Image (cartoon, rainbow, N blue to C red; front, top):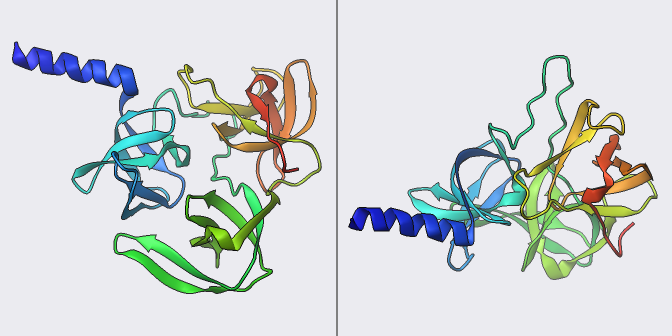
Length: 244
């Protein structure tokens, strides 16, 4: 009886705070591993292509087992390795483009140290000069993740000014918003404005796109920094102010 009550308690807890998924997800980037209670950095890092076993998920975090303990990682930088939430092309269709978004452009305000993080903490790897234009991938509480010598590295947040989004073109920028109660976390980008069109790309919640035109409930958008275009349902787009 006690065992049954314990199982019921766990199920109720998961229902209240998140969704139990018990899946393997794959990292799209270098992602810091955090404490589930305090969100403090544990100085571990998941590498691009590394898989993690997900215990359960909420709107923003994946709860995983890592180095023998339960931790959390930011959900935005992971994709399900298999299953209905991840797109697998059917025969004859091109594979969807899945990539990490380098969302912003910025400028370094003053000469700054550049460092990376791994299981041993922060490692100083160089300096970057004031006035340098940078591509920004992440914006944290205390630091900003930039592309430095071809890979993700960090500088102090106070030393970087965001100047725009890293999408070609001049149209309005929108943020992709997937409803909280949706049973999927990937939205397809299609080659025509119809759900029967081939998938040429995909976006996840909080990705940024630049609209080229819209008609009939569909928007033609630029969805990556290479200028790739495709159609997405306009219902997923939320205007993203301040940047064009």
